[in-house]
Length: 514
Image (cartoon, rainbow, N blue to C red; front, top):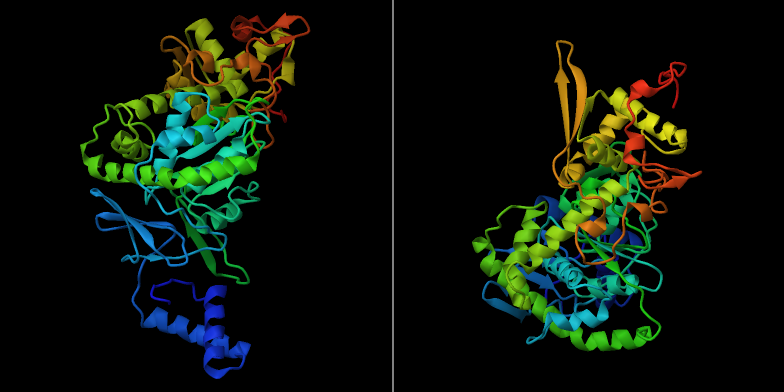
């Protein structure tokens, strides 16, 4: 078409419009709808049984020793990136498809600096800026795993603008940010039709969405019944970069936190505010160079990837190696990204613990006793008695059964280990009684502010309003270990009072609903 090749789905409106136009050009009369349907069905049958099969890509593709980026222009030109550099090409050996709402990338220019991005994203620290740029470089990788960029901040922190700016550099769209999906199917459909998905102003991340985002980040399929069929099945298998924005911490479950790069934006002062039109006008002048320097970094990653030797492979190891291989293109010292990434991961462990009432109490128990061992029933009794002794009773959330406590503790065990609390599950005796051992493994990190000095500093005592989002199981509103109620201060010693100290009149009613 007009000297270039385009790829369209046989069921797309674009192909039907093209066929209708060609029919009119030839016969000077409108085509009957049945004729168009017959033509499409015939083409589909020929393609299935006679045509060659080719992989089809969206925005970014890998072929041989090169990476191709679809610029989204009317001429369907691409950027070809190799270890030697990059160039704009009029054609390429791979097939790209276009989705509705996909917008063009700028024509990249050379001699740019990544520091030109800093005025347009309201990050407060150098580490946060490093992580944001690392996400951009990871998003230009043709295959996952992809990290999830979480942008937190209060009202007036320009988090939505930051999300729009970031997406404009890798996968611009007519609708760059959207509301949270209603279900997993909506999420997968959105991911199938764009290279990057961005969800804006989330209040919390429910369990189903947390699990679905994990699959979207590192890979995993989703199957559902095809519409208007009884037995037909529709499957989705995608990996995509993701952006989330919200006021509070959105990722609180350990498996999602392992995949998140979390940034906290400060409020924009009245003196520093600018009209949005001015921001985008200035950004339009630098984005061509910013894309150019990101492509330089992609080339550097391809060139240096085989020489990267990390002392320890972190979670999302492929992403970490990719960014480490390309960070020199930004003028960073070796190890700049890895230092910021390790700090981010350390903070994530504390966030996971402080988002869970159980995590807080187990941390305090280990810090107070040094070591505790018993069954899940005994552990629940210990925690409940400590809270009752302090005057809280069941107003403070705990798992409702020993089995639930054991399951929640298994989920928290990696996070607790990272802050100095070792959790061991074992079977003892001839009867194979299941026991849990909680042991202090060293200096226990008590809050995010003790992990590092970057970003917003806060501790467990400031998280009482962050707890208890719907659908999060045992993570309901609960006072942390320093909470005050009715003049009684709950401390580790109160929580870890031995069960034997209970009055003989108390009975265990765990057989009934809790």
